[in-house]
Image (cartoon, rainbow, N blue to C red):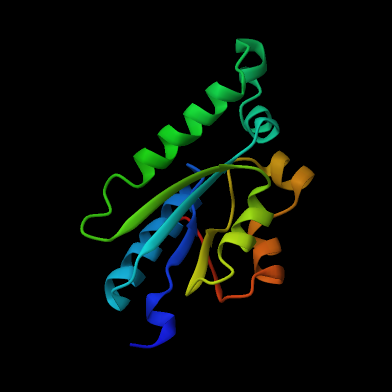
Length: 144
């Protein structure tokens, strides 16, 4: 067995249509290559407020944003079937953490767009950052 066969496919899951498409693509690859998936959802209070400004009015705190992110991760990964999948929820900067957590991965899979064009404009494109900085192959999946 080659070393690459033991490495997981890391996929960014953010609850968006593009994130769901990235996960579906990663599941297909994991089945073809008989490998595991690390489904990573990165949350941050500032991201939550930019993606859902009504959260400010509702008085949501970090625990609420984290719980919503956990729920989105659970929903997104509920129907992966027989694929060995590890769910990882972490706080921080999505683009930097995805690059860091995919350092020893078979590949990193991300969607082409997240929730908000405003957040992308302010924070920068996660997918573009990953393509530039990841040490493994990066696949960017477009939502249909």
